[in-house]
Length: 69
Image (cartoon, rainbow, N blue to C red; front, side):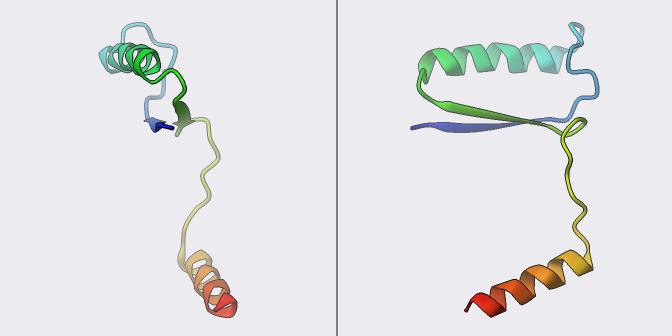
């Protein structure tokens, strides 16, 4: 099964005047027609919560990785 990740980094996703969003819309329609069973996941960077990655976060990840070994 095909998988596609679309990252939207445009503040006005509903904007009809954005050429890049028009291209994306055309691409997605074509992709879905060609890959009817494919999975498309979209992440909107202006709406999704994205946690901050800092030294504390990275230290905790490293500690967890070492504990699981």
